[in-house]
Length: 449
Image (tube, rainbow, N blue to C red; front, side, top):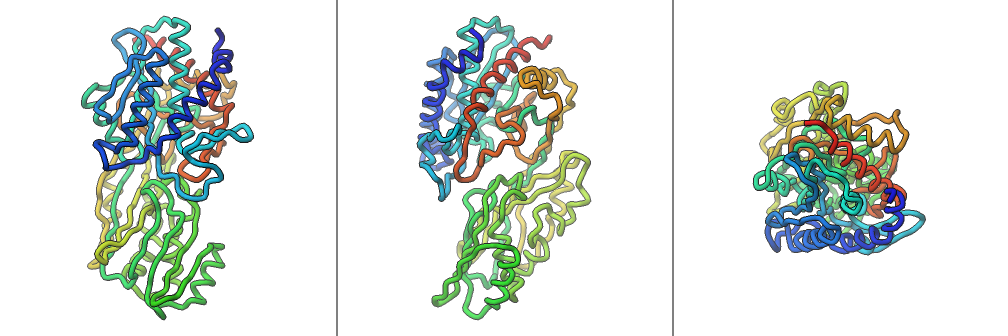
């Protein structure tokens, strides 16, 4: 059977399977180890779906699981993730009910990354049904911790080893040959006049709403309003014993902060512009202000011909009179974490940046057999030989395992609202993914060892 006909025959089943995964709110949790009861449930569900399609399934301690087919010493890996970021407010449909409208499927995780997981399952089902002559083993590895650290794949590598060739359908076609390095850090601010401040949902998304409580008569309200009007930022201001200010922005992925509006930045800069005299506000203005690429910290000096730096301040909270702000940095592929973290040494007596974790950049030569095999699959099936492979700021499973790049699931130019409300998946793209994954597996299978 031709793969296109197979896809049409199975489209409703694909939607139904995706609906089963979307129905599970698989955000990180601490109620059960390792990543919460919802992630245990979504993994069990996915393993059941893979078993139905003829894959030999295995649960790797609830960190991740895989389904395998084929024979041979070499191993092809396809790595997708089942965990999601919080849905947030403002959806036009239930984020945990797969909803079809105008040629799209809506629901949290449909594009990042549950849809790709289902498309990969059906690609393997097609090859199994067609009795494809595998020369290598193929594993669809589904993790449960990509959004909050990728400890799932670190555990997989420790228990099961590396792969010989592979891709993670968690980026763009025709492929990602380079990924920026990453720094995770925490800003701690003490002795601020801000009584309380909170906002954001996750560190790897732009803060879309931020609220601060400050003393009465501590800033010029007219100057604050003028600043917000100048930048076309919506805000609410309520007076009680103190003043409560809520600034509204727009969410986006931390690797693309320019696509969002960071409410925390505008709240802080609005207070500064309005004369709020405060150690944290002044320190923030000096080192961050409205910049998203570390310009005030000197990161322009590390920019290369491929990538630059981006900085996202994502989750803001107050505990015991200490303000905490998560910092998610993506840095250029031709530098290293030592040079990058040196520029974060801007601590003073009240404010400091604490480095939590660093991940070095990923860079592949586009002439390697694996990269050429994947790009050929894309060109042969789409006829598009003009779109180039990309370097990105996002971090994928490719950094967590050897011999892997991000390949799919989005087509360049698509906007699927990943990490935002109304996340969606174009149904035609969903079908095309299956076709592309089939060809990619075939091409990787034919690489001579």
